[in-house]
Length: 96
Image (cartoon, rainbow, N blue to C red; front, side, top):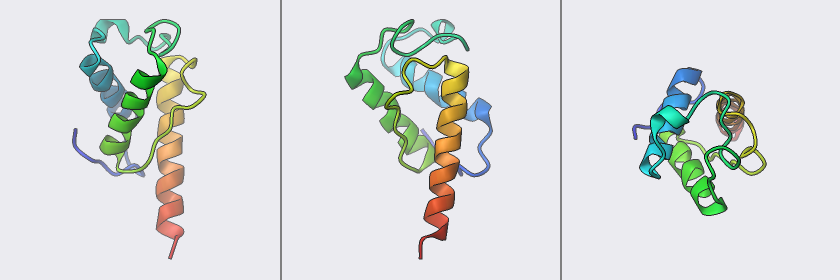
């Protein structure tokens, strides 16, 4: 995955990164609907969830955690990840 600027990344890029990460875990991209949840519908365990978080961290260039987000629908998960990435990028930019 290519690292991108979290401050200007559109949600479609984050969603594509989520789908790519899940595909790497053997989940068919067609199963990753906006209403699917990582833990409930896609049946990810905690290790797989950490792998997705690591993939997103590499993609966005800032630490992403999915703790507590596994039950959100993918559409809401993408928005939460994007907000988290932007908050961290903004915070890192302000740190001297």
